[in-house]
Image (tube, rainbow, N blue to C red; front, side):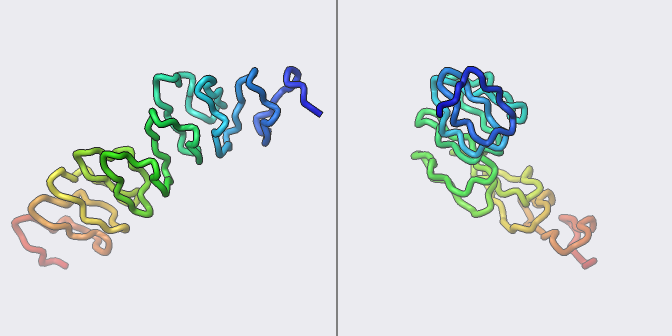
Length: 173
């Protein structure tokens, strides 16, 4: 028996919105895992848990929330904004392929002129330059001490680097 859409009052925790029609905008649950129902003619009306999408128009790309698990509604003319835990980059561009690592968290920073800055376990890549690539180790805490003239002294097992200088060899270990 069909539901009378005009008399329905929605609870925020509803698990099904099959009764929604195109005459009423969708009221989304914060745990929605898919937005396949999104169309280009009708923007989403979001719950408080989402950042605001009121600004979304056909001329501006979507700003995605990290909890979304599907971007099937993306179009060919709007590039994808990457989710934190993406494991696949099937949407990679034609101009240059994406460099993959299993644990990389974001490719949003990737550009044509600069190599990728890497995964979440790293604390800082502020020292990275365009002329020298990063030396990788998944467990490193910091690369702040890395310089252009000297390779990294790895911080994994040491308690202090205060004694290290460029003019005095390491004699205190």
